[in-house]
Length: 129
Image (cartoon, rainbow, N blue to C red):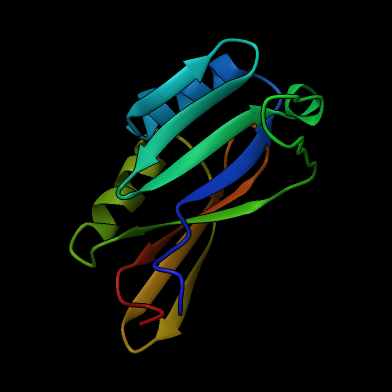
């Protein structure tokens, strides 16, 4: 018995509209669900990125309460052919790239921050296979 994948990952944000502008308008992730003052759910390939207001989800009664704080990490995967295009897009949006890492065997990734200072990474497909 094994898991197929991680379906969702969650970031706790302080401003849903700012997160919507960043993840949807700038990065182009499609919106799946949005409840003002509570959450924003976005599609990233076959995965889902959940953006919750921490204090609201902390007091949840519909689903188990959850919350967090600090600079969390999420990596987005893209093909080696599209990797340089993503790097160019991030730079064109004037989002500072903090580091580019060579993982060996031709695999690269780079790191940048969202408006809540979460550490985001774009990695080449196949890196962990």
